[in-house]
Image (tube, rainbow over all chains, first blue to last red; front, side, top):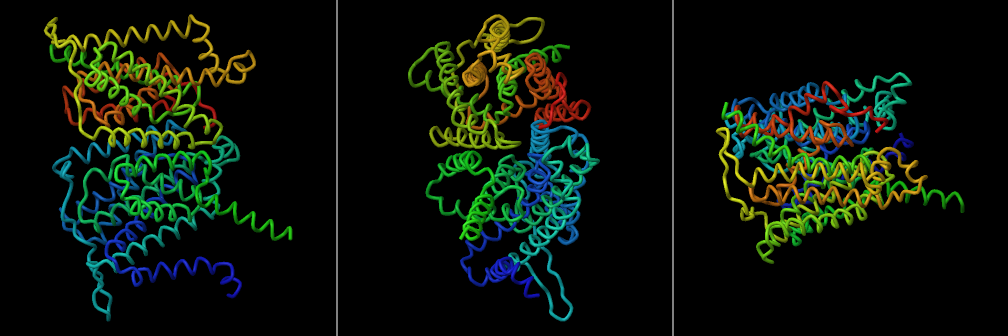
Length: 325
Length: 289
């Protein structure tokens, strides 16, 4: 037990901080920014699975996020389903669409896959903007209900009307996503993901079915993208086709790259630092995005492993100097 | 029948501009193996340069078009030097992300400088010709003419001149080209210059027909990628044919089925073709990544 504590104290501290955040930060606006960061961390983690661990640059991630969002919006608002039924249904729908389009799309490689998925994302965006009866066209859907209350025997009802339970709801799903990603990437199956990312031909040669590996990774990634989208729709209360735009995908890419691709902590760090940084850079207004473009280029040229890569480098250096002394 | 012919005409007009934009993109990919995601934004800048030269400095249409091509050719060289050269030997998706960064900067820079609203370049050739029951505006005919002229000139340049052959040599084998004394850096810069210069010409040609706006590049850039992949990355005939095919698919799909979904047809066709032939219509086997 002590040994376990010693090895994992850092993560425990982070968890405790995450649990008490709503008690410390009472400013409604900042609380909202943090809840959204947690939510985008789910999306970033799932993109990291296919883009980082499996090496396939999917540019349809915003599209799958949107499938989840529209799924929950239509099921709860239009059809009156319970949120807790609509959310898994929407996430499964995203996973299913991922399976159907992954079958042809994953036959392509490298830049070809990136472009194919970019087209898929664009198709989703165009359909969301034009299918008036289902998606409300460019106006989107307004008035999506917040997650339905859960009744706990003996304790009464848990509602999600205020910010604090919403925060814990998102935190719960982030932990769930993180757990699945952790188990998946640390397993033998996760090793086959990495092998496919590093050298697809070699992986194939040692007996890995790379197509099935990529398909599994793509489907799981899209499931969680849909999950994040579903929660997003319910918490924000309104959606428009812009959730499906390529800008959304770019945001996720930015989070995982600046945070550190192919790590589990990186996407979460990225999803936290960037929106908060954006809040502080509000005074720059339109120049904000230009600055981000520069940041992206500088990071990819000088620190391609992002924040986590930098951190590992510094840690190794300290370790080495300790051993030397 | 007349509707069909009209749509074919529109499709060829659209397709020929797509073809020149895609040509530049496929050349850059052939040489550097970089998917230049910011290509559509260079196209957009070309239209803006043309617009400002004409409205503020009082240039006539053709000088503005030529100046815009030169400015963007230089811009392409700068882009290659600042963004793509440092990541030339980086693995996997890194060059791709660098291009994404460039895209974000260029598009937002135009929004900041000149606002997000659309502008229109005055049409220099407003005349209309009626033939075979279809209406052809002079400008549209001109677009087709210039596009095919440029394609022929480019082919002649690559096949008949030493400088042009050096581009082909680097595309075929970088090490081999270096061994026989070709300066790969210079060829890369030249390729980028041609690529973005061509994009600028295409943008200036269609600017009098459509509106220009900061977001116009995104869609065209994506379509250029679709075409390049349809034709196989690095294949020049593939880019030309792919451009025309996409133009026709869009015009006919938009004319007969639904204008709102015309882009879906194009993108859908790509997904379908790749499902059948994962390396594109004219693509060779791709090694590794």
